Structures are given as structure tokens and as C-alpha cells.
Amino acid sequence: MYRLKKYLFFLFLVSCSAWSDVIPNAPHIYVEGYAEQRVKPEIIVISAYLRHTDKDASVAKSEVDRRSVELFEVVKKMGIAQEDIRATPLRIAPHNEYKNGEEINLGTRVVRSIDITLRDLSLYNELNQSLVDAGVSETLDAEVKVENPREIKKQVLFEALKNARQKAEQLAELNGKKIKDVYSISEFKTRDESVYDLIPSQEIYGQSSSELAGVSVRFRAPPPQSGLFEIGEMTASATVYVVFTIQ
Figure 1 (tube, rainbow, N blue to C red):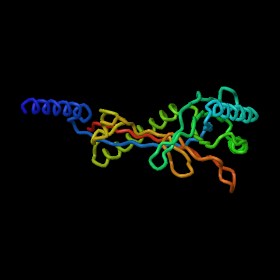
Figure 2: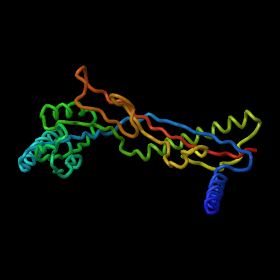
Figure 3: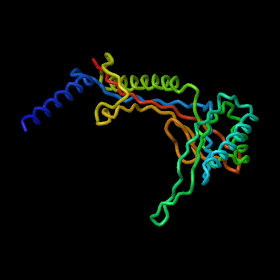
Figure 4: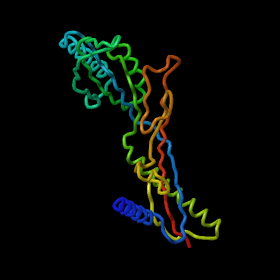
């Protein structure tokens, strides 16, 4: 019991020390800064999943290889560079299913995924439809991205810092005070348990057929038959937490 009390007291001292590093004893203002920026997607990564199951493993492999070659031919005709086409190694494993509690072996399943980076977004609908018409893949996923997400996040982070300072100045002015200096800046909340998660509130999200997704957007192919699929803008956002001392 004595050791437990001693350990808990040690944790209390550590937490108090960490808290004092973030929040000063002097008069201060603690604010949250937020900013977001609209961003146009620059590339689309289309992922095609090729799979085949057969009692004979060599037959399953040959079928996936054949469809892989057909997919490469379709993509090359679109003028997509070789370095923008990436195929994963074959994954070969037994394919089992359960029926009435009994495991049934259906043969060997061979799977390969191929990622196609499309830099000319105007070709998306044509490429997507060509892949569907060729019947080389049962599943197509698409993900919109930007070329340099780190630079965009840095830009929006700076805007969030500006927003934090504006808030602090307004609050100080309303109380007849002025901002003196910045005491601490963090991307993590310091007044609740999320500080221990260490997950900064930064993201880029964009258009999806169902919902907004963090960092990237995934939607099923092919595009709606009612018309061409229009790729919407993405949104980059950042949140910071700043402590200003006041005078």
C-alpha cells in the first residue's frame, strides 16, 4: 500500500509538472485557432483488384496474369506512364468457406492489386469505363490526392496560428488588456484527456459518394450513369491551441 501511494504521488507530481509547462502562472489567454482551405485534387489513384479461385493453383495464377496483362494494355492506350502503374506481388492462399459449420475448400485463390496514378483528371471517366468494359477487375476503388499534402498542411497551419492570435487579441481588448507574448503552441488539446492521444487535428478531405473522409476520398466505380462524375474540391484543415500571456 505504501509503495502504491508513493507511486501515485509520483505520477501526480509528473502530471503537475507537465501541466505547468503548458499553462503559466501569470495572467494568460488560452485559445483555439482554426483554419481551412479549399484544394483542388491533382491526382486520382485507381486501384484494381484481380482475383481468381480454382482447384488448380496454376490455373488461378494464369488467369490473374492474363487479366493483369489486359489491364496494362488498356492503361497504356490511355497514355499513362509506366511509373504510374504499380502492381503488387501475387498473393496465393487456400480459399475456404464454411457451410453448416463445416469448412469447405474451394481451391486456391490468387489475388493481385494494381494501382494506377492518373495525373490528367479529365481522363478519369474514360479510363474508369475502359477498365469496366474490359472486365479485367471485379472491384475498382478510387482515391483523390494532392501532389504535396505536407506543403498544403503547413500553409493551413500558419493560417490557424493567425486565427488564434486574432482571437486572443480580441479577447484581450474586450477586457482592457493587450497580448504580451506567446507562451506555448500545440497541435494537441492541453485541457482534456486528448493530450495523451497525440493526434494532431489536421486533415484533408474531399468529395465522396457517401461521406467526407479524412485525408483521402474513396468511392466505388463506375461513375453514375446519369452523367459524368465531377470531382469536387478537397478541404485542408488545421487546429492549434495557443497560450498567450497578457499585460
